[in-house]
Image (cartoon, rainbow, N blue to C red; front, side, top):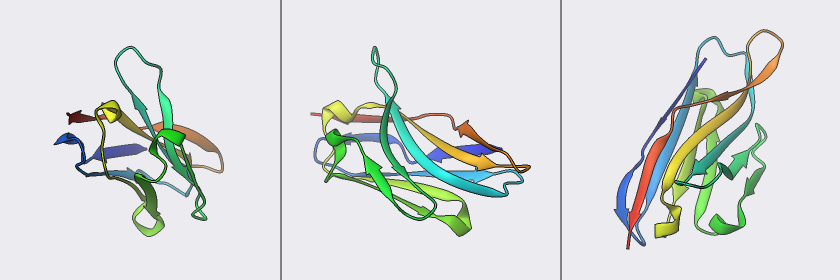
Length: 118
């Protein structure tokens, strides 16, 4: 299984970025897909998650600015980030609960850097 994250970059405060996370590798099913982030010196924190039915959950710090979505046919999750702030600067990781052979396990992708300058 591979989770390929992309879309990070550097923007000024108030700007937008869209992250993508594509899963591949003999996948039978995916339950939750999530985005986490980790800033230097801080623990990894949940940013947003989405179930396979489309129910979403957000960290309070990003509510109203970030939107998580997914395309089940493409095995891909997205994170639309608007009105970015310097405190959003972090490495963003995607995670998914994936079924290979009748067992669901959590998998992680490599991080993608998001840098927001003031």
